[in-house]
Image (cartoon, rainbow, N blue to C red; front, side, top):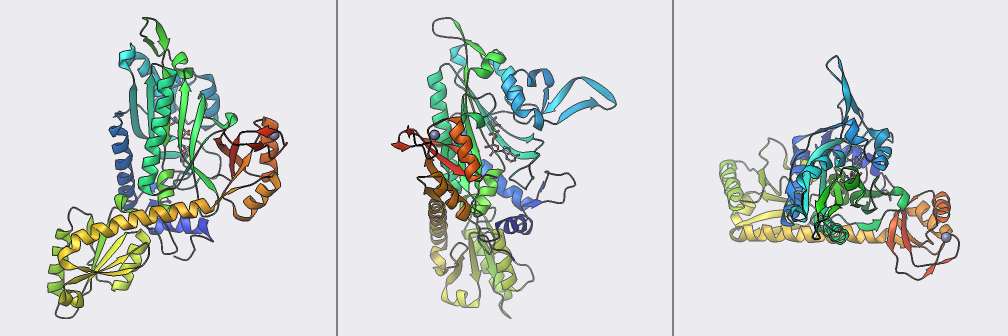
Amino acid sequence: MRDTWRNNFSEWYNEIIEKAEILDVRYPVKGLYVWFPYGFSIRSHVLHVIRRLLNEKNHQEALFPLLIPEDEFAKEAKHIRGFEDEVYWVTHGGLQELNVKLALRPTSETAIYPMFAVWIRSHRDMPLKIYQVVNTFRYETKHTRPLLRLREITTFKEAHTAHSSWEDAEAQVAEAIEIYKKFFDTLGVPYTVSRRPEWDKFPGAEYTMAFDTIFPDGRALQIATVHNLGQNFSKTFEITFENLEGEQEHAYQTCYGISDRVIAALLVTHGDDSGLCLMPEVAPIQVVIVPIWFKGKQEEINREVKKLQEDLSPLRVSIDDRELRPGSKFYDWEIKGVPLRLELGPRDLADNVVTAVRRDTGEKLRLKRDDVKKEVEGILEKITQDLRARAWRVFEEKIKEAATVEEASAILRKEGGIVRIKWCGSEDCATDIEETTGVSILGILSEDVEGKCAQCGRPTKTLIQLGRTY
Ligand code: 5CA
Ligand code: ZN
């Protein structure tokens, strides 16, 4: 790797995407990329985690069409206004112009909710908790980047729920936040959760909660959002139910989503100057065995390596028996982020041990051959904990508090990251703060602090977070 994770992040990122065989960026349409098998396998393991967490909380996976008729899409006024600049339209079937244009979903409220209107009859039909994992399309005009800003979002996991009261929808928002916290904890990706400002909420939502992480270049990346939709969509799509009093009432809804960005966050958070370092749970290859061949011992070593692989089952273990020097094999697997490398040579055989090297620390260990499975499992668990702890340490160092807007500006200019300041709640102060600092308000973190607005000095209880975003 030519470039450093910390000091030349952008170069590091572009290089790793290609060298670790995550995406092929040569596809001839801007903002669209090809998943290589290795990247695709990481993606599958990540999706496995979120599916498990959603299913545990009684969500059901479904699949809705990609195409949305214009009349449905345009029903919710704020929603269409929020997305109209970003929609791809299908206007023709062959040479024939379509009577009703079809939108490629930028998200799926308007595909799913007409069906909710049909499915939901009574309070007994709720809670209804559906999710799908699909591709969505957004004609992004800002600079597109692999995984971070896509025009075809290939890994859009969106959940949509309906409830018979506002309180139930509120409880669902809390559950969704808990699910995402567990998800990011599994990936070891640190986050902060805040409520987006009014002007930045999801089009059609009552309010939006967002998860942000921080990249090595000091910029904040939104990695998940949870929206309380209230009755806004249920009113437009006539999603009604018979309540306990026997009256018709509009359903209360939430939706929450993640995208390819979580995979970017996973790769970046644990990366270093030698490449990726994958969390064991989502690593396509958890352990790679490199045979250290020696004249006359080749066959014996191959046999032992095979046996070692079998003993480690069901861990995902790969043997690198390519005709290359061990050094170049080590280098390849370091770039690809395999969490643990095992080496087996004549000396190891003679001593009845296996040499192990941790990807995250470079630490070299000698494992007893007879206990190897237990030892390897222990090390993988230790790597998981250490990666998570290190990531949180680095993250927390990048969060600062400032008393004045000038102080916030200075920190953000010098080191980026997230800065917390107090704000009175007025849009004027928000605009001034964003103009002076040159960054955005990420969201409201707390409404339970004591102090004064950093801009106007009025007393306030609101603490917000600022950061340069992707
Ligand atoms: N329907 C709701 C909940 S699924 C929705 O669309 N929310 S969203 O607009 O906030 O998108 C969900 C997540 O997708 C965001 O948190 C963001 O991290 C991610 N995302 C949005 N646009 C892109 C894009 N162009 N490329 C990659 N990820 C994106
Ligand atoms: Zn103010």
